[in-house]
Length: 314
Image (cartoon, rainbow, N blue to C red; front, side):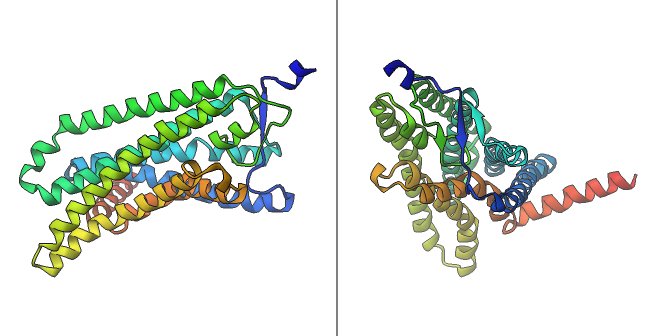
């Protein structure tokens, strides 16, 4: 009997945001709109930056990569949720669940590293403008991006492998709309101390180090901007950083609340809402936050649409 209770689950049940059937159509419509808006917005940024040679700079290099990551991020979970609602099923295979975990951690890490790279870019541009071309050369940008992908892959692989060694009891119900580390650990019959330790130590460092780097960068930026005599110059400098700070606050606030808070403070409702914010809302809002207040991106977007209009006319 003891061997029968400890089994390797073949599938999990994703409860989603609500178990009430009458709310499923509303949830489907809401998430479909958010997915289409987020996917279209991020792809538009990539196309606009790629088509405008004036935007081939380190700042927009990292922004285009952030948009690519956000497009993949929102695509790693929402389509599966929409298919489940349409098919009136809540299941996800064991392999599918581990795959979601791998890509969610990978892409969340990349968001983390790219936000740090963008903060460093702003720091160099504002505090060391004369050395910008050497400090943010193509080689350095490529090194920063490549090392970010490497560390993110190693980190996501670590948690995926540690999760794959666990066994699960009779319950296979996950109260989320996607597979995530915390709810899966709560379902396991195995000893999860090593998994939890890696989340706190390795995960904590991977979140904390970029966050501190962003904090230090903005401390120097604020100090430099306050020395600018012109009020207009101060406003211009702060406006270029304001959108980035808004995304940083939203991203780190939800990540900390879900993964780095004590397990006793976790509740299904709070964690589910936080996961929706950083998995869906933040990738959807990023194109608006970064583009609508950016004159260069507005111009590139108009130029892209005018090219499309001309090609359609021809």
